[in-house]
Length: 332
Image (cartoon, rainbow, N blue to C red; front, side, top):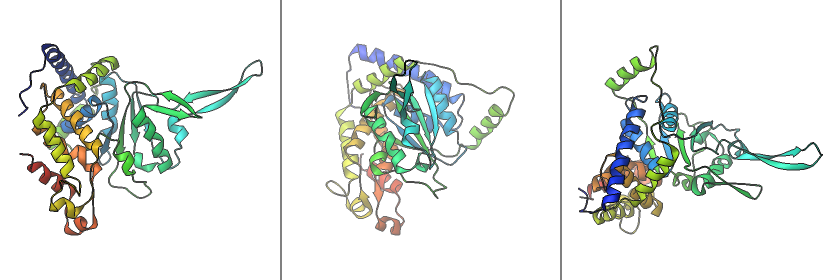
């Protein structure tokens, strides 16, 4: 349960109105994407928190369609970029070209790359070289691009939803820890259940296929993102976040299980991500403030990519999911 909080009437009205708008957004996305309710929720939580997400799943689970649908429903300019080993940083960021006018005067003109959008799908991001992967780093963290010493501001809002195939790892380049940490959530995309897959069969193989429609606009989304940051958070929830994140580090407040099996744990950015994500989840669920249950439900997506097991854990068959579940059980 949430702590007893008495937000003023104005923010209560704003939260209620935003919750109704987000309910329509979820309904619009759910009419196109079947059997992925948790993935839809976590993707929306990422956007509402102003962050970026890493979607991990086998091919054919509608990851690309999800991003396209979210872009349309949220009124965002969305682009898709297929990452390949020969992709260069300029293919993402853009480049300067030398032009000559009719009078013979020469000058450089900057041609924007696909990163200049509001919602970028970085498809199979681990197939690009580290040099190209790092080209996204400044964009994701600072919302700017620097070309030839000149800074170019990216549109607002700006979000990256990157995908990764967990099966075929030959010829791929694992994302460095610094870049993994810049993803607010790691979203694991699983297979749909029987009923959802049956519904999808009829909905996607007929004459008419459902198409997404705009529900809110980009300026409205920015207002909701600002509202998320103003949502009150109870002291009990704050302490739960701190306890969870700090206990996941193999020093300080860690127990023997973490000290023995975790090589490195989450930094302060994980606490920030959890604070924003729990607020966004509460708003998405139509509540006025987050609860400790939100912390437990988001522990996996927030911590999975910010922790690493050591050799001892692999030898003992210990998984990150087991460790995170154990840490959550201590929150009470």
